[in-house]
Every structure is written in C-alpha cells, then in structure tokens.
Image (cartoon, rainbow, N blue to C red; front, side, top):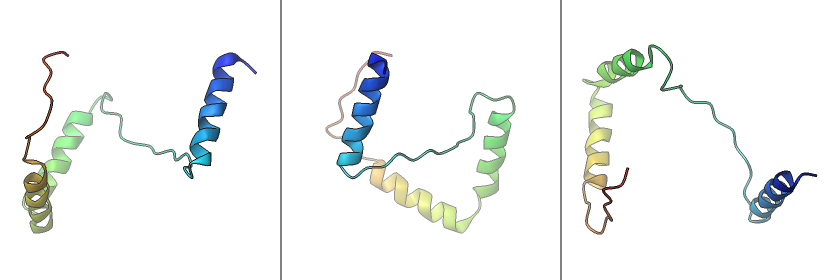
Length: 75
C-alpha cells in the first residue's frame, strides 16, 4: 500500500473508531454555466414565502453577533 493511501486508511479507521462514518453528498456545481441564474430563480421563488421569511428572521437573529470573531485581512 502506498504511503499516502496508508495514511488515508489509518485516518479513516481512526474516524470510524470514534463512531463516525463517511457520507457522500452531491450539491449543485456553483461554477457550472447557468448556476447563477438558477440560484437567482430559487431565491426569487422564496422571496414572498412566509415560512422562508420566518426562517430568515431566525437565522439572521442567531448569526448577527460578531463579538469575539477574529478578523483577518488575508485572502
């Protein structure tokens, strides 16, 4: 077994020993042609949805505080 493959196998075994399991998910490719328009359409379709508005309000309230954040000018 190659060195890097062995390290990956050991790392995965360590994670499994901690009670974790790998999960694969598929998400939209944000670099795909047309993605920006599709995302805009999704956003507009939710704009006037009362359930979405309520959720947005809750999320904004929970994430509004920045006290204690470490800011960096590095990119």
